[in-house]
Length: 553
Image 1 (spheres, rainbow, N blue to C red):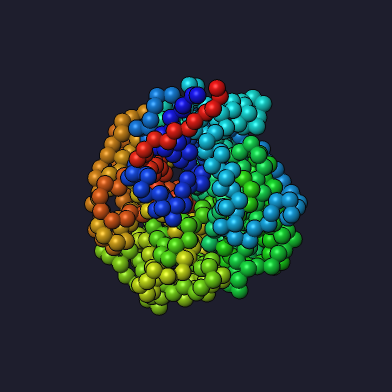
Image 2: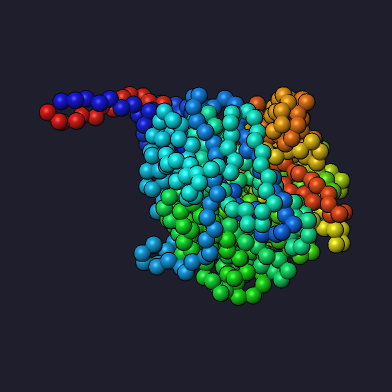
């Protein structure tokens, strides 16, 4: 008889130390097993997956990429690389009986839980291999990209030093890839596109996203003169099946030319879907819900307007009773807030702006009533008066049963024909650390909000992509305020650089980064929120070992 001793902690690490997979144990399960599992510890992730959308189809667009991983990850061997994905046209809806239709976020996540845990096991094994296997599923870069040449578009050579690339190809592909070993914790990639003319002209930027099974996009639209495409990118080696649901001010929108159900996204491929094909007539304000009922995808919306420019719209933070939208620029000329309560109950919210000196309630919009399942939109005229701030939405009444909401804001700068658009979705707080890549020597603003108690953070500029030395500063935030400032720059640095925000003490901190680039009088800008980089995961400490008996004698 052979006896193999397995540590509970070791198994948990193997399953959990992966970005973008289902949680190992539900909260109620964790509570019931408290006697056999000790205090949870934070462990570095062993593998991260990112997807970047196709940047632009414009012939007058130029796109810059910058990839970065902070120092401090575990191990010495590993890699981080992005490869070209295939472009696929939207396909006919999949057979509902075969794929199992789902009309809810929970349904989509439940169907994927077992698969994602299996992926976690495979990824953890690959992360422990000697060669570090930096591509999906332990395959070579050639297989991971679904391309024959196996050449990465963008890869890191060492943690702590950013790497940049550029393209002006109107057929530039979406990108998918993985990072493992010391490259995995905090791996981030910024994609910034300058569009010189036409619909969507201005500055369009996004952080490449982590694949998942559910996304909420308040602030989208299908109005005339505006084209919103949701880009669905599958980083895995099996197809994903996705449902798209649109909500308007009257509730769920009726289907247009396309039902939005059962969209197949092939392996290592991207599918763009024009949202106006999902509604029979134009709708100014809609919320999109993306549900992967099999597999997982990355999802981002590219919004282009003939008059107001455009930008990428990232998903809102997960539904919650309160939301924070950090970093509205000090010279914003218009702010449109979109909110949806996706559950079955109406939500009553307090609307406040956390500015330089504290929280204020915008005149005439101190509260907001949001009907269940219906998009509520409000133009906050005169909200910003020369002072950057963060929108804070909270339940109007105290209690544990406040309905959940999702939210985003469309922000305009400039006037008349020189207006430009950016989006600020609600975001999660920086629990420990967050990073924004692709910063420039001028035109970069970091906004840090402490909507509750005061906090202390450390802000660190990496070396530039062309050299230099890192530089740090410590920032103290007063409670109920937002501090917007130019972040530190690397000493003697050249090229773009990354900025890392670390919460050292105090209350919750929310962060965003704004890039500005004026072109022909148009105040181009883009805002990326900075949620926690999920570089670590909570792993229960083993209280005892389990013995597995193999009867092979």
